[in-house]
Length: 215
Image (cartoon, rainbow, N blue to C red; front, side):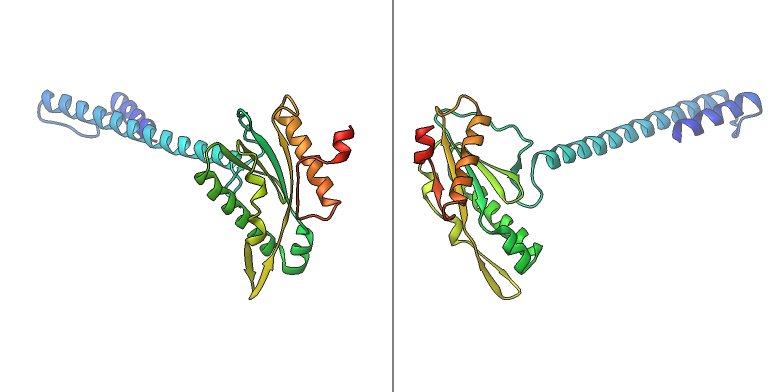
């Protein structure tokens, strides 16, 4: 709009008559310099502001694409970095559908958020600890300490909804580097062991079992 106004006024001046007249040619020249400088400055400020807004919007899109808005954890679209001597844990909240059906989806969201906060706390306390929201009620943790999964802290969490205290547990499947050559293979192993635990009582950590030993 600034550039268009400037050009229209310039065309009007050249084809009809100046909008303003000055007593001396020096005054006319000085006004032209001031007018041109102000136009360039206005366009430059607009460009900088527009660039700042676009870059901020882009950063927001990148953050939204990389992090889960509910739990604040990285989501599965973020590439999981491979670490030396790491373990992969697939964590699944037990009876999550029952929680949603009984207490409502807001309660389910609070359960997931509480787990996300717990994993975030572990992330800041431990070295090389990467928690990821995998989808639904599933989380993936990549960590170099093989004993992390044995510290059962999820069952200690509590969520209060309308005065009712909700307790919940999780089933964890684990796989260690060396069992497969790729991170995807380890996630698949941890996932299958988690489902094995789901079918054998839940609320447990499954690292390996006899069926897998035989296979």
